[in-house]
Length: 327
Image (cartoon, rainbow, N blue to C red):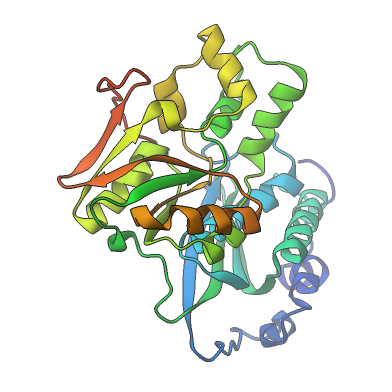
């Protein structure tokens, strides 16, 4: 990041970030200290904030375009887990002198591309200098009809547990970027790296599926399902053999360069894991079909506490650390 220096703060906002607010009248052109947002009648606002820190959540040589996409998408994934649709976002940047104007322009282009794709507009934010690594924060604000939010505390014993997409690819992608030899090359290597750098928020599924409770898989499938268990005062049983994995993940498992427990606890998948009554299976599959997202039943909510995992032979599986812990 050694190119053109940054202009002053307000010039930077006018040149790089104000265009990202053009589609939201409540943003007031980013000329005021705050935005004016009118909620849709009959809806509740849903808010989420996530931070990405270089060296922790993204790598120094990750493309700025994709860093911006990941920053927005991890927040949109939280909205998806609440069944909400996006409205606006707020951006906070703490950037060192090593970040130049070209990097920020590429970052803004990535944000603009995904704002258009996911129908969300920038409505404000803040920029500041830091002597540490780049720290990027985004707050996403969405809406959900009153009484329709997918709360983690709404699960019931006997409900089926489902997950969207495939699990474990992002963990493989990160390991490859960190130099691990997993025996993957070509398209397989590129595919799992893309899953780590540019996750896919399951917004359409979250808004459509007749779920009781949901959470997105950010820290690991076992860990995040554990949040639903804790909030609902229940346990869960996962059948590891049912958990959907991609072709590259199966190849790595077959070569022994990754273990099944690593995929279940790796994190950064940003898929949805959700519960639904046992008699709503057809409705779940219909909603998934409309959202064009595959879903797989992987287990059951139970009385008790915590998440237990059965291996492909039906025996209890030793997991160890359930997922990523920030502290």
